[in-house]
Image 1: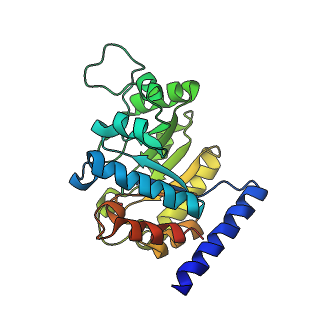
Image 2: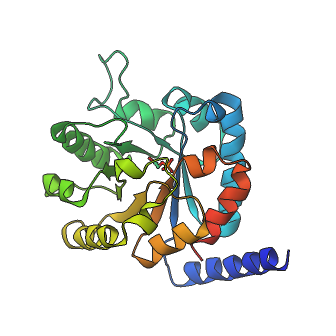
Length: 245
Ligand code: G3P
């Protein structure tokens, strides 16, 4: 109880300092994937609760709802929405496709690109990144390993995340399992993509996992099962958020 109150005071103070010195808030992307518990109204309620909690803690939250819920969430929550996927089209003829203009039309802030559960070709990623940046849709490129970044020398992304596929939805976080890989990846982003925020994800479940990621240089994290499948998702979220401070 005391430690909860202490954490609250601490995060409020940090929020004030962030504002004063223009420090960007740490980022948390909650990926709702296709889990039953995150679909429709249940998922929306989770998104709303997560939004309030993250504002109170001074963390920039993005929710990536199930693709079928993108419009429903975007029109019904104050939380910022990222599409889990985007196709290389703006709008028009594209049955079943997710178009950049159509995402902007419904108030979506950005999209994940090349998630390892939905890999995309280099050409289409480059096309989407270019058009999105021209049109004002944020992009978060996901890569499975650091060397993959070499494919994108001339492309620009708002965020770049590494998620080793074998650790996704596992019990051991990327920050604990692969600290050297994260260090190498983050320094490569700083060198080749200084405009991009540095993120990581896979198996991240609690404040310790977040704290290590942050210490290694992460500006933010991506989380799915540690939140969506937790017995008490908001308690789990609280712990994740505390890890940033
Ligand atoms: O995009 C987030 C992700 O793939 C990590 O999933 O379940 O390991 O948190 P998880």
